[in-house]
Length: 429
Ligand code: SF4
Ligand code: SF4
Image (cartoon, rainbow, N blue to C red; front, side, top):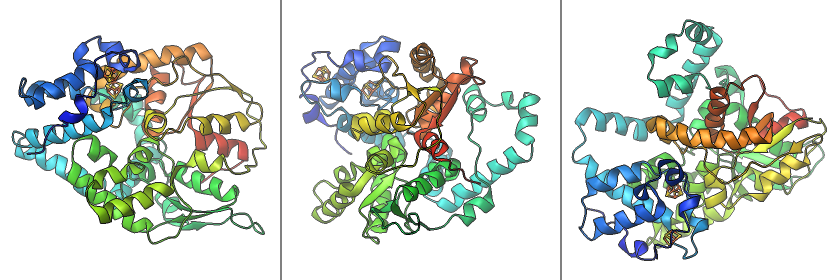
């Protein structure tokens, strides 16, 4: 049996400075749903004072946003405590999970997310559903309301997926404009859901990097980053995916390994943590991490032809994982402000999570909507007509927030790349 991370929990001096930074504490108002309370519970479970079952709900309801880390003056590694405790809970729960549920989970985590072909087939079916008019008919006839509330809500904000032919025709490499020497050689990390459901954003990302003077390559053999697996406590699966990605990206001597999803990037920059004590893989992971960048970090170093003004008020919903783990905050703001015509207005409490957090918003729908409603109040106060995000989960969540507020006609929710592409005059099929 894996061990709970006791040594890290005793670093917490119980001062409570992290409490106001925690969205679940602020909305649920319970000590057990605060960082301090959760750390204390992990410590008590490690000491045998409470059972693992008593730890389950407080940890399940943690977003993993890690807003408590920068707020902590004692440098407590909450992320490490959470992930390791979740591994223990995953192992513990495995013993009591029914066979069909375990089979379903194994299929999703081990056969679907890591397999681009299966994800492409799923995306093709969604494309058919959207392009055949079936989606409109189902929504008009309120057939989607047959689904549970959480699934029906997200069905309505599904992105428009790429057609199978556009997906197949995507080149494996993108070159800078003719006559321009490549500024950086970039290996692009496509992701799993990102490349299935948000392929248009991936395509725009690569086109934009090329336009900015980079030589961009889609490296073969890459797979899902493993973030969803890590958050579910599935360490062995996460390690397997990390090894596959490290091996794949070693094939190309790139300056940067670039991703465009805050949640994926946060795990990619911590791959070396997975191999602690394994000198060979830890070293290989460190080399991978040293090259890993969010796309905004690379674009901010380049010239971009942003010639089309966007005369709108823009606000930015930070990805928690991008700001709290990757520590990337300045570059997206800098890029937004480069676009001519834009009026930028920051939300109050900009670091507050939107409640998306991987599949948290599907699994813990009600709690997630409470957190989202708080976020939407601060968004509305900016009077923005465009919300920019840097993570697919935040993008869907904010779209849902806009819809819940009845603002779908007035407010657009865009990935940073879509906004930059609009100003650069880029579009994809
Ligand atoms: S990770 Fe986020 S939700 Fe979890 S305890 Fe920290 S601040 Fe609260
Ligand atoms: S996690 Fe840090 S900020 Fe929060 S109670 Fe413990 S020591 Fe204080």
